[in-house]
Amino acid sequence: MTSGKRVGLAVALWLVLISFLHATLNLGVFAPHKPAASAPFRVGFIPVTCHLTCPVTDFINRHLSGESGFEPIRFQAWPELKEAFISGYLPATFILAPLAMRMREDGVPIKIVYLGHRDGTAMVVHKDSQIYRIEDLRGKTIAVPNRFSNQKLLVVKALKDHGVPLDEVRIVEMAPPDMPAAIFSKAVDAVTSGEPYMGQAELDGYGRVLYQTKDVWPDFISCVLAVREDAIREHRETVQKLVDGIARSGKWLDQTMDHRMEAADFVGQYYYNQNPRLLRFVLSKPPDRVKYTNLALRKNDFLEIEALAKATGVLKGKVTFEDYADTSFVPAENSMEPYAWDYQK
Image (cartoon, rainbow, N blue to C red; front, side):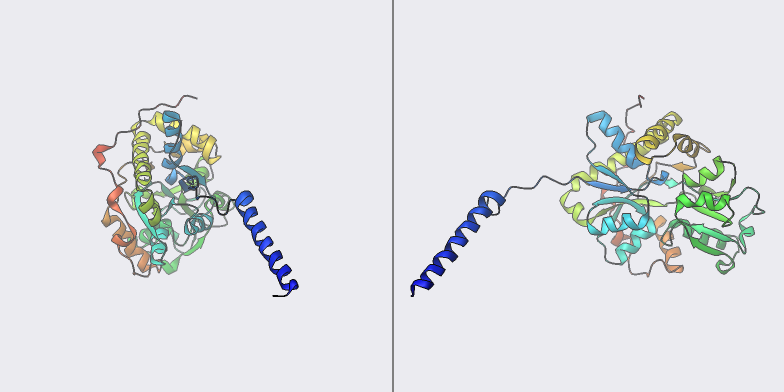
């Protein structure tokens, strides 16, 4: 070997040694592996009353034990929440029932484990309109939150039950926060979404309720609690605690009107960034406008959603209840007591 080659080899070995020492001492590349701190168990929600048990569970647990067990993450729109779940940023989320079913159909590893509510939706028209019956919607424009929303399926069901062909109305998609202004300006003839946006139009005096969900589709389900399958495998105990907390929060909310008013105050202020006056109205006018008990997964409820979703093209018909639902976390109705806690301002 020539002297030049020997020098070159020595330089190369020296560079390898220096790189190894830098990686070990400064970057920790070759250091013994230390488990990373566990990521927070994030749960997505949107500031609607269908998702109320999410912040209520978080708030009560923090006041009872000093910690929640999960981190509620607020979103303002469904597309962003959906993408956060698909990416794995959210191991769990409250989400539209038909959307969760469609995501499963499209291959997303999602499982519905519990409900978020029952009822909690209204259709609102302008107070000066001549729409007093569902039949009066012929030729009108109706805004729904999303083509994968159960509110759209509710409109389809209501029209069908009252003999109004679907092609005699125009259905458009609109973000729920924009709906009160659309009714005020008469940009559309009717709006329907989860509360409190319908209640806002009513409370401010320019909206009139055409129907409450409980009058058209009793025990209506808009949103569900869904979890990623990898989260179920790796964090089963955390998922169970979350479901149990939702069940206990629901019973706490439905236990007394005082609890509902307390929730309106702390959720509006700390989680939803909404005027508690609006939440107080929606949670009490009438008291059964939205309910938070009887949240078990009932197969027949979802079969009804499936049938309407298939008829409207929301679902392709490739999944069954067993594909998108996991009932193993549902607690026995009598086993869950409401939280023993009162809000102190």
